[in-house]
Amino acid sequence: MVPISKIFVVFVDGSVNGKRGFKGRSGDSRTMKPLPVLPIALVTALLLSGLAVTFSSEPAQASELTRFTTDAEMRYFINTHAEKQDAGRQEAVSELDTAASGSYSRTNVQVDGVDESDLVKTDGRTLFIAEQNKVHLIDTLPSLSNITYVEIGSSANVTIQGLYLHEDHLAVIYCVYELSSGPTGSSSPGEDIFQSYYIYPYYSSRTCIQIYDVSDPSNPTKVLLGGITGHPISSRMVGSVVYLLTEHSVLSGEDISVPQVLSDHGTEDVSSTSIYYDPACPSVSSFVNVLALDVVDGSRTNLTALAGSSSVCYMSVTSLYITMSRWEGASSGLLTTTQGSLTTTIYRISVDGTRMTLAAQGSVEGGPLNQFALDEREGRLRVATTSYGDETDNQVHILDMALREVGSLEGIAPGESIYSTRYLDDRLYMVTFRQVDPLFIIDLSEDDPVVMGELKVPGASTYLQMVEDGLLGIGFENGSVKISLYNVSDPENMEEIDTYLVEGCSYSAAQYDHRAVLYDAVRKVLVIPVTFSSYSGGAEYWTYQRPWSVGLVLEVGESGIDQIGAITHKDATVSRSLYIGDILYTISDTTVKANSLSSLISLGSLIYSEGQSYYGWYATRME
Image (cartoon, rainbow, N blue to C red; front, side, top):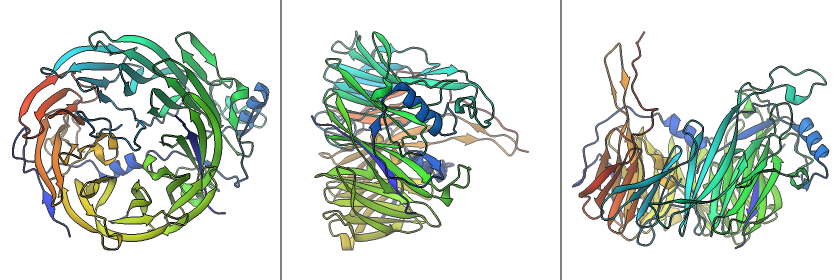
């Protein structure tokens, strides 16, 4: 059997110069001392966490989408196809971004015109910072000051997933988790599946979008509420419409509980006859929901499909793609998944504003790493995947808008896995990794892709972005954050123009979250957070304190990468940076700091929060 991956799509109309250490010239800069590192394995795990998979020993069958004709038909299908898995499994994907544009920076997004949620947003004057169940509103003029905050529910069961800004409307996406109970037991012949394979207790969840009018930041006013049951997977915003993706387990107590749509007027069950499903699918585990909500006029629609666990969400201006990975011919044992072949299912939903229609379903071999593995251009969906078996293999698949494969390239870097991808017009830049970092350039101008060039360098880039003077890579080498600049103008003779390797052991959110990257094309300035952990103690005891981190400021120019400085946040974790005019703001979990972008001279700071309680200290006896 050939491994395949299925993908769902939603249409929406409408030579190395190693530079080590901090050599900052001003601001809150300091020398970075070598410190214990967060293991590369942790970074790898975070990178791969987007690949949610399910298991099946059933052979692949021809698939097509249809709808149920009755509620009884839907319930029978679920009872005979439901996967045997924990009902309370939570797999939240939250997607976070920042990039420079105009007089103030916006979220660094994958696709122009498609906004992505973030925990920090600005309208050019006010900062909106999400923390657990609160959103802090902070004024930046004439100096940093707290304005107010909005609070949603209790911090015990409410978590804000991200924010959107559209004109004077602030959209807060949050999840409410509720502890529920269900039956336990083992299966027996003839026993209903919902009396088996159930964990007690379990969490149920619903994901909501609360809209505030923030035309007067001192008095945020609730405007409307929308939501749908299930834990959050991802979201996007095009124009004034937010597209929210959630996943709702088919296992819910002793009975099947269909998703519910939430509004200011209460809740309403999703009609069984409106739910899409694939009769040939051997097993299902979730209701996958897409809610489209216009934050201005409040209009909304929703779409639901019965499927497996979703993994990656990608959206172009006209299409939303949802992928679901599964193992064919493998058992569900913890260590036996590589015995089968990885496949990925894809849905495509056509959207015009809030109007959505599930338009296509397709499949490709292997599984995508993250949203950057997918790209839509001129009626083609390009998908980069990794397959697992006796040896890993990487491919690029070309699909038409009906999600039929029209071309592919296989056998890229056998034995390695994809660590990052970035599409630019008819080229794909791909990094694979095992011991060194091969950077590939792949020609996508025809339906049959061709490798144009390859460059091997130490370490690995886990995020790629094209800048004025080359291809920028952010990743790691020997446990430290590494930034690389590649000359890719001649694919057959690529070179690494320069590298910057942070002194000592370090970690950056920018290695796995593009929203932590701030790049200003005019000033050619790159800002990323870099975090260190502090350990102390002797042979018998050791303690862990809050980390300290910096906003690392680099100049990325024609000659290479040079450090400008580093803005330190002690006992805090820097997560984001942005600029308004000529002022750079770095945001940690407790503090906002303002510095001159040109000199990094401190212009002020504000402690807006005490931080989260999960930081602390403890001592362990060494046996």
